[in-house]
Image (cartoon, rainbow, N blue to C red; front, side):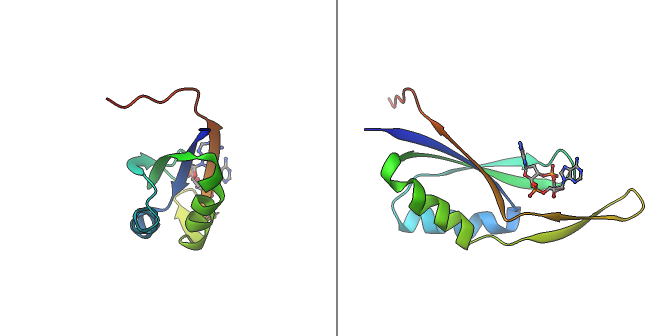
Length: 98
Ligand code: 2BA
């Protein structure tokens, strides 16, 4: 079985819906609290170890449950728009559960 790891950085407010949808579709997910390096504000990093053939389903759940946002940072009230999600997908070489 080929396993992939999805790492998705999303807005905090979007994470609950994504997690609910993963659960509904019997996909496993872990939420980690994280901080954006540029905005220095909280976001959520979601981890999912998933079968290769479920990756597209997972990516569409993330895409359909996120939205773009505008933030302001403190240097001359500079406006920044944050994307819906940043997603990295990598191979899992080995996975053990005890
Ligand atoms: P932040 O680093 O807080 O970045 C928030 C938004 O600020 C970014 O949205 C981008 O539109 C803008 N931004 C970031 N760096 C910038 C810069 N040097 N100059 C001008 N504008 C800049 P997104 O690209 O949608 O990223 C949202 C969050 O996703 C990021 O929050 C960061 O936590 C994460 N992220 C994005 N790309 C990443 C990457 N290649 N590696 C690791 N984390 C990443």
